[in-house]
Image (cartoon, rainbow, N blue to C red):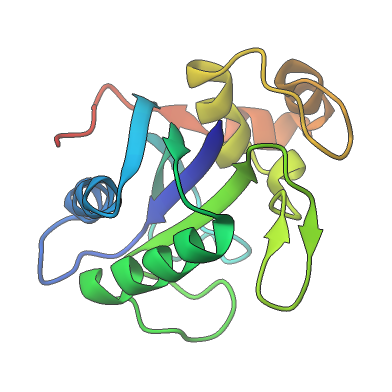
Length: 169
């Protein structure tokens, strides 16, 4: 199975950060990602500057008939369609799509690192995974999602909010 995380902390010409994420999901479906589950929205402060707009994130669980290289190319196109402009690291953005886990594949090159190199330490990745795939195990660390959540700092565990809002596709 494939885990993808989508985040947004800026409105775009399409609408709110929630709309940006919904559009991204629809474009992933058009690119032949077979989505099995979608988490609720989660909200977290921006990092490292908490004064910037808050992020909305969701997690997806799906299947893909093509390889990870084709998927990363599709993701890059989708981010640009929604209006993402690459700027400094951690700057606000209308759309950020990350492959967290691609069928357990382990890759480390300049184009892509799988699993996502910081997935094990990000609340906005782990909580959606726990919701949609509670038995998930990190492909490198061989630790389950509950273990990884328990390893988060207390602050990281309390600064995330599960919103009572679902994705519209």
